[in-house]
Length: 171
Image: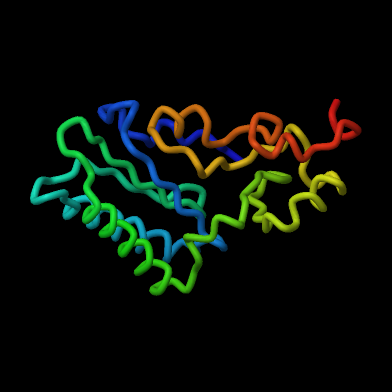
């Protein structure tokens, strides 16, 4: 699985641009992905904060992740503009019958595929070597463009999940 997404992130956005990651509970099919990408473009064109246009970017990655980014160097994101992005995400949930706000569902790359594991099953997955210290994990808690580029897809061993790995599972 090719995990190189960095070239798709706009270079002209400040490293401290705010980032929101919304993970779907299932992969979008090609038709859905095309429709969502058009909706994301439209959302960014219309996105504003207190009447000023937000410098925004949004894209669908790996068929599972909607990433929205706002460069606040000129226009700060207010509560209303954040609310509008949440409404937009909720509309996608409804239109495509998916869950995008479930923070209890974690994503990993296992055998070249994205594997979604409920938080309640993570220990089982570690104990049974489905997840290892080297398994790549999608750290959806990132907050900035800089973190998106460097800390979004990381080995489990570099994440908060490392504390759940028994010493016997380490190399």
